[in-house]
Image 1 (spheres, rainbow over the protein chains, first blue to last red):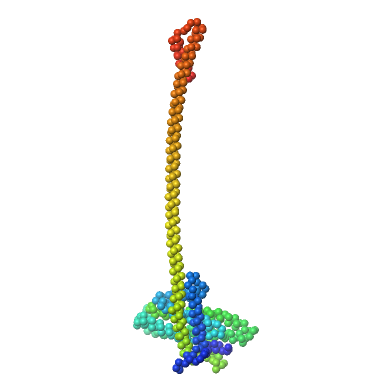
Image 2: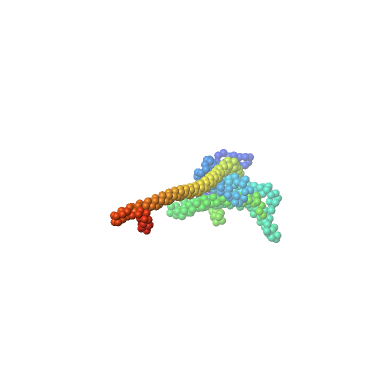
Length: 244
Length: 191
């Protein structure tokens, strides 16, 4: 491995080059780790829903725990109207969580540390939520930009701020996840590099930092997946229940 | 988080200066953006379809089954509990009735016993009274008889004594009269 802490984020081709016109769609290490994460999710859910026992076994219990966790999160933030979107948010949470967690394994690749991946997910959510909002409420959905109870003098300013904040949703959503993942992994790599360069005598301090950071990063991996899912729920709530 | 991002940026700039060829963020290299987007959409779509069509309904079924089973069991337990309470009530009523019956039987038998004792006592008392009366009559008769006998014997003894002393026989009628008078005074007093 290179000493460059950014080297871990490099994408390279695996297998033959797949070209679609002039667009390169080759299978890369990023694709491989997406596939690994998705396979782990499917395997885990398969084991978790395999036997129909009244008293669940451990994997079944964890799968049902995730199910109830997401179901409760959706009903708490977006209400009962968001029920049809439960499979999507469940898939989203599981995918982001597993990508983050698989990325915590040494020598692995963190799919979510790439801005393009998080941006596509965030843009998809943003566009889907906007479409849902317009389908549910028609042009009344635009009233989301005009909050009630604001003095008439401030209203133009507030409306502009609301529009900017609405449009910056995909950016904030994607950059939050991407920056957290990249920063954490870079820090781990930097401290790892310090361990090697300081040797047996001085390497213990950065090593202990590395250990502590690994724990922190696992927490961040879960937290960012949760934040990503709950923000999706909140955006969905804005589109489904027009509160303003 | 801000501190972390700042640190990363600093490190990135440091590396850019140090090693210009390797520097930069691979994230911003657009070579594989389309590839990543394509594979992300493909893999996530497949994941979404398998979760939405296969895993979520199954987990939901499992959870619903469990909930229903628990509900059914609870309902059954409630029913059984109600039944048990009903039976208990019935049993208690039976017990109360039985206690009442026992008290009644006890009272009846006591009354009957009292009655029979009383009737027996009465018969016995009547019997006793009759016997006493009979005996009393017998005594009275015996008294009378013994008084007559005593009188007769006294007359004879008196006539004998008078005959021995005076030498001639006394008048029977006078003697009898005298003996009866004396016996009325003395004998009847003792008998």
